[in-house]
Image 1 (cartoon, rainbow, N blue to C red):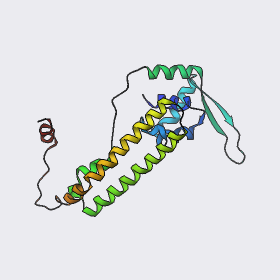
Image 2 (image 1 turned 120 degrees about the vertical axis):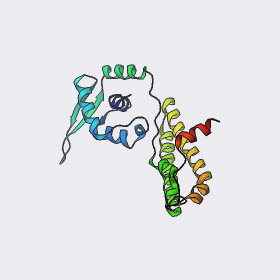
Image 3 (image 1 turned 30 degrees about the vertical axis):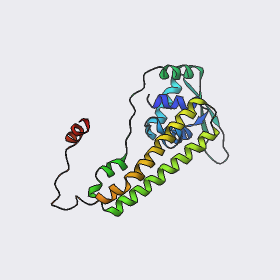
Image 4 (image 1 turned 180 degrees about the vertical axis):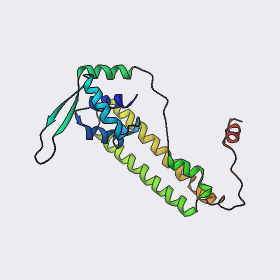
Length: 194
Protein backbone atom coordinates (compact mmCIF):
# COMPACT_ATOMS: atom_id res chain seq x y z
CA UNK A 1 0.00 0.00 0.00
CA UNK A 2 1.22 3.50 -0.75
CA UNK A 3 0.56 7.00 0.65
CA UNK A 4 -2.68 7.16 -1.34
CA UNK A 5 -3.96 4.04 0.42
CA UNK A 6 -2.78 5.35 3.77
CA UNK A 7 -4.76 8.59 3.29
CA UNK A 8 -7.85 6.56 2.40
CA UNK A 9 -7.32 4.40 5.50
CA UNK A 10 -7.07 7.43 7.80
CA UNK A 11 -10.19 8.97 6.28
CA UNK A 12 -12.03 5.66 6.59
CA UNK A 13 -11.78 6.19 10.35
CA UNK A 14 -13.14 9.74 10.14
CA UNK A 15 -12.93 13.16 8.53
CA UNK A 16 -9.64 14.98 9.00
CA UNK A 17 -7.64 18.00 7.93
CA UNK A 18 -4.45 17.58 5.91
CA UNK A 19 -2.51 18.43 9.06
CA UNK A 20 -4.34 15.74 11.06
CA UNK A 21 -3.73 13.18 8.30
CA UNK A 22 -0.03 14.07 8.23
CA UNK A 23 0.20 13.84 12.03
CA UNK A 24 -1.53 10.43 12.08
CA UNK A 25 0.71 9.19 9.26
CA UNK A 26 3.94 10.34 10.87
CA UNK A 27 3.35 10.22 14.63
CA UNK A 28 0.01 8.56 15.27
CA UNK A 29 -1.32 5.04 15.07
CA UNK A 30 -0.92 4.96 11.27
CA UNK A 31 2.83 5.68 11.48
CA UNK A 32 3.43 1.97 12.14
CA UNK A 33 2.18 0.79 8.76
CA UNK A 34 3.93 2.58 5.90
CA UNK A 35 6.35 5.48 5.43
CA UNK A 36 4.58 8.68 4.40
CA UNK A 37 6.62 11.84 4.05
CA UNK A 38 5.17 15.28 4.65
CA UNK A 39 5.73 16.14 0.99
CA UNK A 40 3.79 13.10 -0.25
CA UNK A 41 0.56 13.52 1.71
CA UNK A 42 -0.78 16.78 0.28
CA UNK A 43 -0.19 15.78 -3.37
CA UNK A 44 -1.90 12.43 -2.63
CA UNK A 45 -4.89 14.27 -1.14
CA UNK A 46 -5.05 16.51 -4.23
CA UNK A 47 -5.02 13.51 -6.56
CA UNK A 48 -7.61 11.67 -4.45
CA UNK A 49 -9.84 14.75 -4.65
CA UNK A 50 -9.41 14.97 -8.46
CA UNK A 51 -10.36 11.29 -8.75
CA UNK A 52 -13.50 11.82 -6.64
CA UNK A 53 -12.29 9.45 -3.93
CA UNK A 54 -12.09 12.24 -1.36
CA UNK A 55 -14.10 15.43 -1.00
CA UNK A 56 -13.41 18.42 1.17
CA UNK A 57 -15.24 21.25 2.82
CA UNK A 58 -13.90 24.49 4.18
CA UNK A 59 -14.26 25.27 7.85
CA UNK A 60 -14.06 28.97 8.70
CA UNK A 61 -11.89 29.84 11.69
CA UNK A 62 -11.82 33.15 13.48
CA UNK A 63 -8.43 34.84 13.22
CA UNK A 64 -6.84 31.85 11.46
CA UNK A 65 -6.75 30.55 7.92
CA UNK A 66 -9.72 28.39 6.97
CA UNK A 67 -9.33 24.62 7.35
CA UNK A 68 -9.91 22.04 4.64
CA UNK A 69 -11.70 19.02 6.12
CA UNK A 70 -11.33 15.91 3.97
CA UNK A 71 -14.01 13.20 3.77
CA UNK A 72 -13.91 9.75 2.22
CA UNK A 73 -16.50 9.45 -0.56
CA UNK A 74 -18.37 6.21 -1.36
CA UNK A 75 -16.05 5.80 -4.37
CA UNK A 76 -13.09 6.34 -2.05
CA UNK A 77 -14.34 3.63 0.30
CA UNK A 78 -14.70 1.26 -2.67
CA UNK A 79 -11.16 2.11 -3.84
CA UNK A 80 -9.83 1.51 -0.33
CA UNK A 81 -11.57 -1.88 -0.16
CA UNK A 82 -9.95 -2.73 -3.53
CA UNK A 83 -6.53 -1.68 -2.14
CA UNK A 84 -7.12 -3.95 0.86
CA UNK A 85 -7.86 -6.92 -1.39
CA UNK A 86 -4.31 -6.89 -2.79
CA UNK A 87 -1.37 -8.75 -1.30
CA UNK A 88 0.53 -6.85 1.38
CA UNK A 89 4.17 -6.05 0.80
CA UNK A 90 6.61 -7.80 3.15
CA UNK A 91 6.97 -6.06 6.50
CA UNK A 92 9.87 -3.63 6.77
CA UNK A 93 11.65 -2.83 9.97
CA UNK A 94 14.34 -0.19 10.15
CA UNK A 95 16.10 0.96 13.29
CA UNK A 96 19.08 3.26 13.74
CA UNK A 97 19.29 1.98 17.31
CA UNK A 98 19.86 -1.58 16.05
CA UNK A 99 22.66 -0.37 13.75
CA UNK A 100 24.29 1.35 16.72
CA UNK A 101 24.02 -1.83 18.80
CA UNK A 102 25.37 -3.91 15.90
CA UNK A 103 28.47 -1.70 15.98
CA UNK A 104 28.48 -1.01 19.72
CA UNK A 105 32.04 -2.31 20.05
CA UNK A 106 33.03 1.06 18.55
CA UNK A 107 31.14 3.07 21.18
CA UNK A 108 32.11 3.94 24.73
CA UNK A 109 30.26 1.88 27.38
CA UNK A 110 28.61 5.04 28.76
CA UNK A 111 27.24 5.86 25.31
CA UNK A 112 25.82 2.34 24.98
CA UNK A 113 24.21 2.67 28.43
CA UNK A 114 22.59 6.00 27.44
CA UNK A 115 21.37 4.58 24.13
CA UNK A 116 19.84 1.57 25.87
CA UNK A 117 18.16 3.76 28.52
CA UNK A 118 16.71 6.04 25.83
CA UNK A 119 15.49 3.07 23.77
CA UNK A 120 13.82 1.47 26.78
CA UNK A 121 12.10 4.75 27.67
CA UNK A 122 10.89 5.19 24.07
CA UNK A 123 9.56 1.63 23.90
CA UNK A 124 7.75 2.01 27.23
CA UNK A 125 6.23 5.30 26.05
CA UNK A 126 5.00 3.65 22.83
CA UNK A 127 3.46 0.79 24.83
CA UNK A 128 1.69 3.36 27.01
CA UNK A 129 0.31 5.14 23.94
CA UNK A 130 -0.90 1.88 22.44
CA UNK A 131 -2.47 0.74 25.71
CA UNK A 132 -4.35 4.05 25.94
CA UNK A 133 -5.56 3.69 22.34
CA UNK A 134 -6.57 0.07 23.02
CA UNK A 135 -8.79 1.11 25.95
CA UNK A 136 -10.73 3.46 23.66
CA UNK A 137 -10.87 1.03 20.74
CA UNK A 138 -13.98 -0.99 19.88
CA UNK A 139 -12.99 -2.46 16.49
CA UNK A 140 -11.55 -5.97 16.71
CA UNK A 141 -9.13 -5.44 13.81
CA UNK A 142 -7.75 -2.28 15.42
CA UNK A 143 -7.44 -4.04 18.77
CA UNK A 144 -5.51 -6.84 17.08
CA UNK A 145 -3.11 -4.38 15.41
CA UNK A 146 -2.54 -2.54 18.68
CA UNK A 147 -1.95 -5.80 20.55
CA UNK A 148 0.65 -6.83 17.94
CA UNK A 149 2.48 -3.56 18.53
CA UNK A 150 2.29 -3.91 22.30
CA UNK A 151 3.60 -7.48 22.14
CA UNK A 152 6.43 -6.54 19.77
CA UNK A 153 7.59 -3.66 21.94
CA UNK A 154 7.26 -5.75 25.11
CA UNK A 155 9.46 -8.45 23.54
CA UNK A 156 11.97 -5.80 22.43
CA UNK A 157 12.14 -4.46 26.00
CA UNK A 158 12.64 -7.94 27.45
CA UNK A 159 15.35 -8.78 24.92
CA UNK A 160 17.17 -5.48 25.43
CA UNK A 161 17.14 -5.90 29.21
CA UNK A 162 18.53 -9.43 28.85
CA UNK A 163 21.23 -8.28 26.41
CA UNK A 164 22.17 -5.08 28.22
CA UNK A 165 25.13 -6.42 30.22
CA UNK A 166 26.72 -8.14 27.20
CA UNK A 167 26.31 -5.03 25.02
CA UNK A 168 27.85 -2.76 27.65
CA UNK A 169 30.65 -5.23 28.47
CA UNK A 170 31.83 -5.43 24.85
CA UNK A 171 31.39 -1.71 24.17
CA UNK A 172 34.59 0.01 23.15
CA UNK A 173 36.42 -3.26 22.47
CA UNK A 174 37.16 -2.35 18.83
CA UNK A 175 38.05 1.30 19.26
CA UNK A 176 41.83 0.82 19.16
CA UNK A 177 43.96 0.72 16.02
CA UNK A 178 44.91 -2.90 16.74
CA UNK A 179 41.30 -4.09 16.45
CA UNK A 180 40.73 -5.83 13.13
CA UNK A 181 37.59 -5.61 11.06
CA UNK A 182 34.53 -7.47 12.31
CA UNK A 183 33.54 -10.84 10.92
CA UNK A 184 31.88 -10.33 7.52
CA UNK A 185 28.09 -10.51 7.61
CA UNK A 186 28.08 -13.26 4.97
CA UNK A 187 30.15 -15.45 7.33
CA UNK A 188 27.76 -14.72 10.18
CA UNK A 189 24.80 -15.76 8.04
CA UNK A 190 26.51 -19.05 7.08
CA UNK A 191 27.27 -19.82 10.74
CA UNK A 192 23.69 -19.02 11.77
CA UNK A 193 22.40 -21.60 9.23
CA UNK A 194 24.60 -24.40 10.65
